[in-house]
Length: 261
Image 1 (cartoon, rainbow, N blue to C red):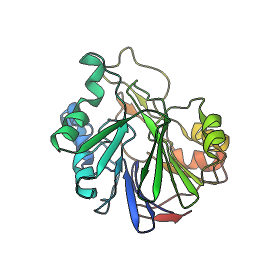
Image 2: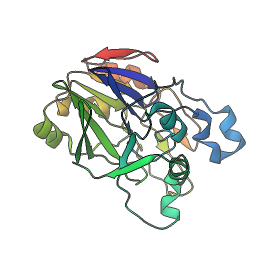
Image 3: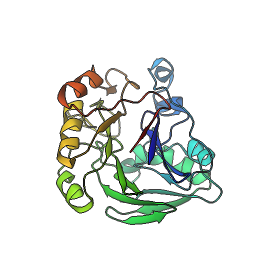
Image 4: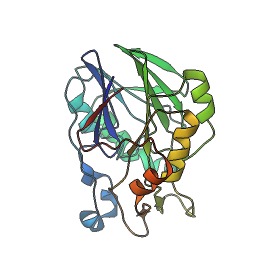
C-alpha cells in the first residue's frame, strides 16, 4: 500500500494500481472566504492536486478544508462515489459550519453516500471503514480506516482526542500508519458561541498519544502549517517539533511525497 500526502489533510492511498482519495483540497482560499477581506492575507497551506480516476472519495467531515467538491470531482473516475459521515439534522444555525461544502457537493452532482460509524465498504482492492470521531465544533465527523493487501492506514481528519482508540485497535488491529492532525487550533466561529477554551483538533501531544494507544507503527502528521488568524483560528506554535519530541515513530512527508506500508 502506498500513501501520498497532498497537503493539509489530503491523501491518496494506492494498492494494485487503484487508488482512493481522502479529504483533497484544491481551492485553499475558499475555506475562510466568509471572513471577507481578512481571508486574503491569511496564511494558507500548500497543496497539490490528486491524480484522476480514483475509485472513490472519502470525506471525514463537511468543513470546507476537508470537503472540496471541485477537487473531488477532478479526482474521481466517472460515477465514483463519495463516502461521507451520516448527518445528524438540526436547524439552520446548527448547519452553518457545513453549509458551504454541502451545497458545493450537491451542486457538483457527486454520488454522495452517507456512512455511519463502524460501517465497512469494499471498494476494489480496498476495505474502508468509517470510525467514530469527535468534531471540535459539533459537526458530524468520522475517521477512515483503509485496508488493503494486509496493510492498514487510519486517517483521523481533524478529530479531537477521544476514547475509541483502544476499541479501534482491538477490533481491527494496529494500523501501519496513522495520519494525525497536530495543529491544536483553537477556534472562535460566530455560529459557535460562547467559544471553547479547548483546542478544536488534536494538538501534537494528543496526536502522539492517540498513535501510541492505537499501537500504530508510525504517525504521519497532517493538518498543520496552514491557516492562522488571531481571534478566529489559532494553531499551536511549533507543532511538528512538539510531535517529534513526544513520539519517536514520526514520519514526515513533503508535499506530494509517498510512503510504502
